[in-house]
Image (cartoon, rainbow, N blue to C red):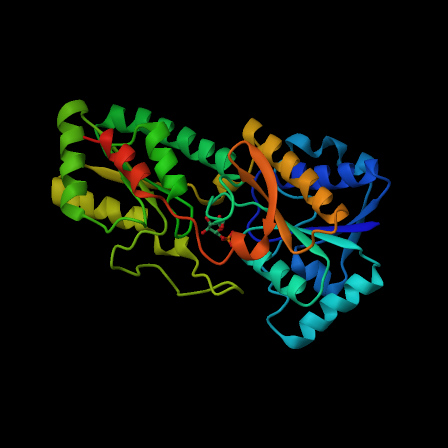
Length: 340
Ligand code: F6P
């Protein structure tokens, strides 16, 4: 067989190990793999690169994606959809492995509905893909955010300040939740809970009274009822560019004005997406990439490899996408247990 592989959407640590797993697993069964550049754009426009086992061997610990990525929606226009079909025929692709988040996998499902031989691998630092327990990228990216929070603790303590750390995650609060829990924040704000200003100020005051400083983690997706800084710009899948709203900076101003505590903010943005994948992400990406090849070899097109408990299994793309997996009340209860 001739496999194709692409990585679409926002990059995250783990993509390269997943590519490596696909190429290696396919090669060991006697199959070759070609890479499509820049996500679905590469399939639409016929942008490829050969991928040998030697090309990918050293990718296990490398961040980003050697294939490049984009947020191209190949089914936005009928003529683009035709180009996708033409490229796959021209490249003689027997099985396409689409590695991506909800948008990339939604395009994969569309291709499958049109008879395309495609399987999926979920990834995203946001951890918001519904069909899988965890996505790779999340652990590595959140470890960066926790490291940032710990650095902020040092300087907040020295200057007796409050500091707000704004993290990514889109409309799911997983990154903020895990950063707040693992980094010991005094208040963590996630999109799943309505913004409670009085409670935020109370927590900041309590933390400052107890220790002289306060740390707040804010997810970029929270709704403060303001659109400061936002141009309303959207990507090809219609998602607003949330970091432009600068909710962390806005919160810092409000906290300082209300509590009198000198307050700063930090937005770490794409720093979270770079760097070597951590242990968990390397292993998960490797397992999912290998399993995607197995799904294709078994003719189980239209499925996606996911993590369920300890096991990696294939489920229909339909079941994995469409709804975003958001933070559940039990996690929120645990989070608030440790706040002042
Ligand atoms: O989906 C991953 C993510 O990092 C989100 O957390 C963030 O909102 C978005 O991508 C940023 O997108 P871009 O890289 O296009 O600025």
